[in-house]
Length: 124
Image (cartoon, rainbow, N blue to C red; front, top):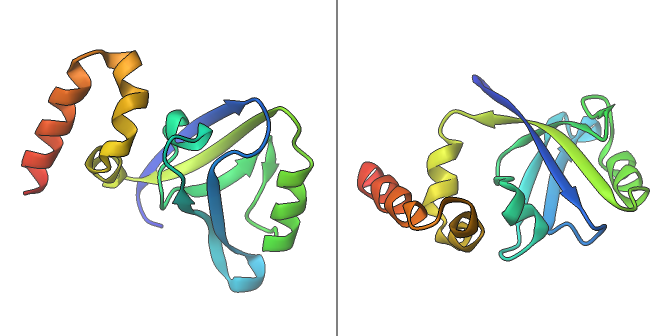
């Protein structure tokens, strides 16, 4: 996936988490976040589409098949911790998707609108 940052994402409250994965060992592709539902635990956690999943609750994912990942995810009852690798440009993708603004608003106040405006200007 190239250069990027490693980030720990945490969610609580049990499934549904609000994201879909793709890839796996049998597909010879890294496990990645394919889709995030708006207004979900995943969207509020800062998880981004395209994030590579390195581990789930301390379990390395590099050698897991997709069915093994699904089995692991189904075994999680309350707390989900994911170590992810994020592409350098993923921050701009995150900020471009304005559905994240409500979840950022309570953390950043009115500055979230400024950040979104600046991100849109940088990408245009």
